[in-house]
Image (cartoon, rainbow, N blue to C red; front, side):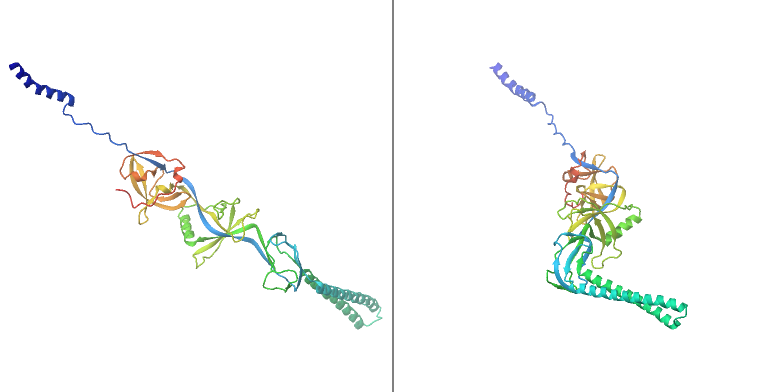
Length: 394
C-alpha cells in the first residue's frame, strides 16, 4: 500500500514534465515575414530636342479654277470634251455656229482689199506728182493734195486691217477653248443651246488638281502663345518643315505639303486665321472640297521633357501631378504641362531630366511608400492615359 500511494503522487509531476517537453517552453510564436515593397514601372525622363507640331483641320481646294463662259453669242453645235476628263490649255471645248462670224470676216477681208487697191492708186499718183512738181509741171497745191490722198489711203488700209482682225477674233471665239489645264466638270449646256456673250452661268468649270491647296484654320490664341514662347527663347523657329497631310480615314497621305502663306488678319467671327499648304496630287487622290487634317510644325524646343500621358494625373481643379520615385520612395510632384505630342505630355515645370515617373502600378502606391522599380518598356508608355485622379493619395 505505501508503495502504491507514492507512485500516484509522482504521476502529476511526470505529466507536467511531458507537457513541457511537448510544448517547447513558454516562447511566443514567430511573427510572419513583412511583405516585400511594391513593384512599379517607371519612365526615366531624358532631355531632348522636341519638334512642336499642331494638327489643324482643312479643306482641299484647286490651285487654279477657270469658269468657261462664251465671249460671243451663238448656238452650240458640238461639245468637244468628255465630262470629268482631263483637258489641256487651249483645247477646244465647244463649237458654236459661226456662219455669221465667217461672213463678217469675209466682208472685212474684202474691205481691206479695196483699201489696199486705193492705196496702190494713191501711191502711183503721189509718185507721178513728185516727178512733175520737180519740173514745175503741176502746182504745189496739186502735189500736196496727192500726198494727202496717199496718207488717207494708207490710213484706210490700217483701219481695214484692224476691222479684219476684230472680225477674226470673234470668229475664233466661236470655238470655245480651255483657259487652263486640269480636270473639267459637267457641262451646263447641250448641243442646240443658245449661249450669250459674258453670260452669268458658266458652260463648265476647269480645275487644276495637281498640285492642290489645303486651306487650314488655326486659333489666333495659339499663334499668340507661340510668338510669346519664341520671343522668350523657349522655342526656336523651324522653317521649310514638310507638312504631313492626314486623310479623313486617319491614314497619312503619301506626299508631304509645303506651307505657302499665313493670312495677315484674323476672322472676327471665329477668332482664327487662315493658312495655305501646297500639296502634290499626281494620283488625283485629293479632290476639291475634301476634308483633311494637316500636321504643321510650329517650332522646336531644345532640352524638352516628354512624359507618357498615363504618368500625369489631374485633380478636379485641373491641376496636374505625377508620382516620382526618389531614393526608393514615392513622392508626389505638382507638374506644369504644355501640350500633348503623340502619346506624351510636354513638361513646362515640376520635373527634371533623370526623374523616374511611375507609369504602371499607380493604383497600389502612396506617397512615402517604399517601392522597387523597373524601367517601363517603350510599348507600355504608349498605352492610353489614366483617368484623372482626385489628388495624391494619403
